[in-house]
Each structure stands twice: as structure tokens, then as C-alpha cells.
Length: 184
Image (cartoon, rainbow, N blue to C red; front, top):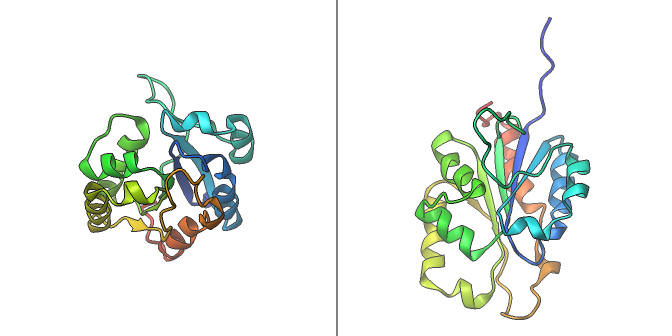
């Protein structure tokens, strides 16, 4: 008897940005492609989320802290990772190799584990103009991270949420998963 094949599992890393509460759009897009989803929030990003709503929608608890010794894993291994919305802070720390929270630890390990990863940055033009940001995006691209197309919004403008394409993460990752490029 053969085991039923499990669905691809997508980790969605959510950062502290005003649009983070709309992450359900990304969850729906992934589930619509037949993927299971688990959400990992940065410590600050957790406050931006409807945790109970997301947990009902995904069937998994939101993770934002390291497991304690002996604690069971909440999610299956990731077949792919989407970081959305990705803040200036997360993009720069990730590119520099900082792993000072669970989300960044997972992201820093991902390239070494061969896990396809897409990032949808969400920053304003002032932050995007900082030299470190451009270097960080280039570094992530050199690591094989797929980078979304969002154009930065004006500072203090409330953000351009209407232009943020949550489903772009799924569009970037789908060819890799559907071609069997996942490491499952």
C-alpha cells in the first residue's frame, strides 16, 4: 500500500507592516494551488495578525518563537517559503545573516537547505533609497531568493496596499514546486 502524497507545504513569514493583516490573500492563493500553509510571524509582526482567524484558515498555530527542548514541531518541513510583507529590517538582517528570531533563523537556513524562497518587500521610497537595502536585495538575489516586483510607496502615505500583489509569491514559487524542484 502506498502512502498518500502530502501537499506541498508553504511557510509564510509575515513581518510588522501595516498590510500584514491581509496575509489571508496569500494563504488563499497558496491553498487555491493545493498547498498547505503555516504562518511564521516576526515577534513584532505577530501584533498585526488575526491569529485565531489565520489558525482556523490554515489549521496550524502561528509560530513566532523558538521551540523549547522536547517541544514537537508545529509544521511539516517547508517545501517553499514566502516572505510577505518583508520589511526593511527583515530584508537587511536576513541578507546580513542575522538570525535573532525564529523567522530570520528559518530564512537564514533556507538557502543552505535548498528551500525555494520568494520575498515580497514592502518598504517606502525613503527606506528603499538607503544603500544597505539595495545591497541586501542584491545579496538575497545572489542567494537564489526570488524577489517580488512591488514598487516602494511614499513615506507616511499609508502605503500602496492596493498595489501589493500577495499572490505574486505563489506565482514565483509555483513553477519550482510543480516541476518537482522542492526538496521533499
